[in-house]
Amino acid sequence: MSPPAVTEAPTAAGLSTLARRAQRRYEEMELDQLPERLHRDSRLYYYLSVYPSLRSLPALSPEDIDAIEPPKPVRSAYLHVPFCSGVCDFCSYFLVPLARHRSVGLEDYLVHARREIDLHRQRGPLEIAYLYVGGGTPSLLAPDSLDDFLAGLMDDGILRPPLLATFELHPELFHQPEKANHFLDVLQRRGISRVSLGYQSSDEALLERHRRRHDTAFLADAVARVRDRGLYFNLDLMYAMPGQSHDAWEHSLDSALEVAPDSVSTYFLNVDRGTPLHHQVKQGRVQLPSHRHQQELRLMAQLVLEENGFLELPNDFWGRVDPQHGDPDTFRQIQLPSDTHTLPLGPGAYGWLDDTQLCTVFDLPGWRQRLDAGQPGLWRGLRLTAEQRLRRDIMFSFKNDPALDPALFQQRYGTTPDAAFPELFQLLLDLGLLHRRRPPGLPADAPPDLALTPKGRLLVEEIASLFRDPRLDQPAPAQPWEQKLLDKHSFAPSYGMGVGG
Image (cartoon, rainbow, N blue to C red; front, side, top):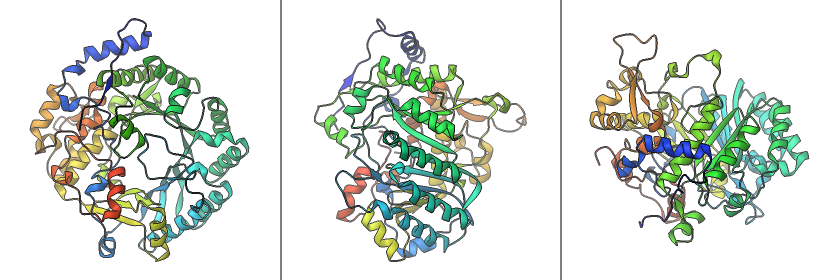
């Protein structure tokens, strides 16, 4: 792969105070001095949301599916709603663009989703206390159909109060005020307590360039409607977009702070294979920002959000600090990531059950056909060995927890992360990416926690990918019809180094 073209960061002259502060912090952290494999590259970046990758998961036979033993009851689920009005040029999620497919059956999607839930319920009780509805664009669903769907799940005891639930909303919803009100009323009535709005940027030229299909004028009105219903409100922002200047990113951060969200998600724009943006970069028609420019934008977010009362936890997610809950440095890891079981629902969904990374079929007609035949939508999956689970638990602990608690790993695996991978942990300590911390109240004979430093948090995905299993870098066998899907949607670590390989 040829190296991507880059847009170099400008000199400090003419930059805002915040941008100059970020440049100084970049230099103080000596981020240029890190090994090359820890330099952020838009074409090699891996957003850690699933592991192993889709390409590494073999096809599941009916016998494989029968052998999976979900927890009893299952308490967490992810529902993927794949429909979108168009395709953003950076998007690699499985979706069905309505503009190209007029007869995709959006109307009966929830009927099939309920059928899939009932098939899983035949295998064991479902008492869902945490539900995430993502996409795609879940807010394309008809409000009345959604109301009936959620009411049925509640009446049958599948959704259990107190329910923690998040629903992703596209800005397009607020182009139709009556539908927006109806939709939000349904969420409020059915216990959906949190919404996440894909704002991404206040730069309308950037939005248009990436085919986002919305402007920015909707935001204040949208937030008012959400607030009127008492919903917890998250705002998505995207940084390191090609052509995104320091000033444009600062304006996006300011716009977010003006509406006072409860939380902010900052997403690094990576370039996945198979997306329109990937083709544009490969052809030399789009230039990508340099490692330095990317990290300066990231540091700007770190500076301004922390100064406005936000705590970064998990990484790239910023929630408001509640002083009543104490010092954030005292927060501890509660459980290992492998203890969090999630049922995947809808086409193109990922889940984790019975030490097995799972996904449903990345094909809408194929998903329906499986359900109509009385089979769940599960498509590919891999049960991990103890060593592979250890690696995965380290990766996701870095991503999602305040620090790694060696005692939890010792109880589960008979070893601690730094004992299992001593050379790599020593490297992270030497580079100033990791430190050992001893929270108040920790017994004197207990090993200290392992926490990323502010510098390390800038590179959490790169650090996590160092722990991947090199044996899982090889793709699993696939049928010819599957290969294009696997190539496009495989969120795979692609950095040049793994432990032992």
